[in-house]
Image 1: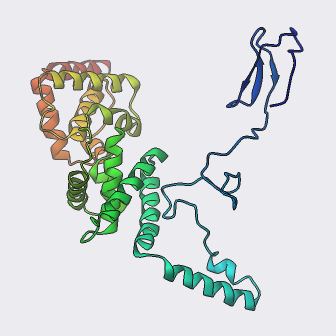
Image 2: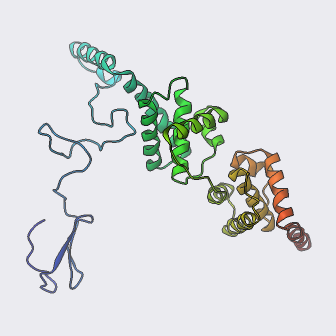
Length: 308
């Protein structure tokens, strides 16, 4: 930070340096004396130079990479073949030996982290969930819990556990579609992992799915709020106990859409929620019977016929 004696506007010497914004601000008049300043302090990315000090070169370390991004790899084959013949042979030999000296855990992590990024990208998951899933997979791999199970099913189970930890609603059917692994296999692996690692996850609530489902179905904010009200009443009469959260949330949205005359078929709602039409139909019948919504829906239908 350069030495500044006083504010040019009010001549005050009470100045504050904001390292996050890169600005120097006058405490008395609020003038931004300097802005867009370059931070010459240490970098917290985790990179170190030859002297063991933190430097500013390279990308930050990431647990999503098998080596945490701290090692140097010999270039890609396509790049190596662009070199002179003598250099090409040299680097091909180096690349071969680099792959040979890596351990089985490193090879497993290399493939697993690539698969994790593909599935997470398909599901549009935030970076914090990917980091948590990578951390869980590292624990599973170090304890030898991957043996006897496919790497893809373990990765999908780790991502599902991370989503549950951060209250990000993703169904097992969505995980199965993204990973091309059967739903039952992912669920079985997920239960095994949380039991062996002692991971405590919260039970998904139906209201967590409302926002995403209504967004995909392009329903109005009023319909979304009405669906939340239906869910609240359903919880009061203990109608949500022992039922899948995605199914009860989808049924509540279907009911709210009918009330607000936003026609959506049971098939459309079921496809978005990853459940069957039979489940939607059963949850729908339970909601209108227990919450006495049948008369309200009939009245709404009658009003619409009158308008037509």
